[in-house]
Length: 465
Image 1 (cartoon, helix red, strand yellow):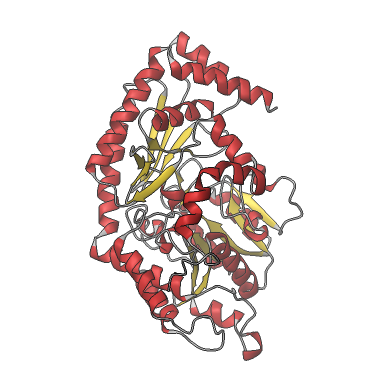
Image 2: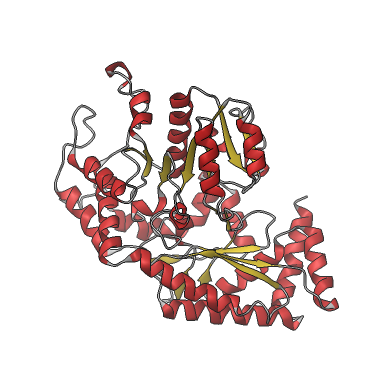
């Protein structure tokens, strides 16, 4: 029952009274660099509501979301089926998280997930992608009795200490050593994998089938051949599908694009949440789980306080039901192919546009050094200040002029990554391509506000050195 008295909690009233302070509150109490960064690039918007692949500001302006909360909003925002599931589970007043019983929802969600990965047998539920990776690392080390994990350069597997140890970017790792005894190899380099495996201390290779940074897919055949090498040396293959899983790439998992690949452990999260309740899952083979949980004394040797909570499990079940009912995987494949075909057709038209790549609704747009003297001199100016500034110059007008939210794919990269909700349609593709074409026209005109903003970014980059 809602308490409207003076001592009651009224969320709507609190937001009405204090919502306008959002940027000041973040500056004072949270990460103070976030509002500073948003104001610098003109992203300090105030969004009032959202639905599907769109959100609206206080003036009723519609924005197209091509970011999906870094992939969390696979079904878009506020899908009615997921909303209803959460209302239903709250209204059920379940005896949740007693810790000493077996509720049905975790088993039902595990059953559903494993139906999409028939070579795997069991699931551990945590609360995030980085927890899913941490679980896989622990399980692999314990099951094999070996300490070392291999990962790929430029990989991103999370930011907690274990997953940070297999993070392929120094910028995230700097200042947090010592980390776990792990070793990087180039994505696709089988010779490097062989060399490391010969040392006899490798527990597993953890790999994103498509790296989020730069949107680089593992070369054809790499995952299958790596799997064979790992099995030969009694090491495990861990597939990090936190961003690529649940339909993002046009298959349920990205590793399924390559025939014969059956990872020993698979990490999922993000879209499984429905955008509401944090959830992560580590799927694995029966023998691995039996080795970790080898006796009743070890029943809690790996656990999570909020793992398997009813709200997260209900959201996950609703997400998988929607994916089946609305044929989300096929839809992502079809819409992603359309988007990439439309963008690829522009590569020969714009000298600053180098390549369009990806699978499903995970697309990378890479920019490169132009050929004409005037554009080349400006490109060189940006590169000298900080690599990645041109991509930022594209992202900003997409939001400011065309109300489309995108992101630069990684630090010091001239790549924009598109990971929209999997429910975008042809009209959304048209809107993005039209806007992107206008931004590219402006960039190639050699003048205007876009290059003025570029000079502002250069000054900011130089000042931050």
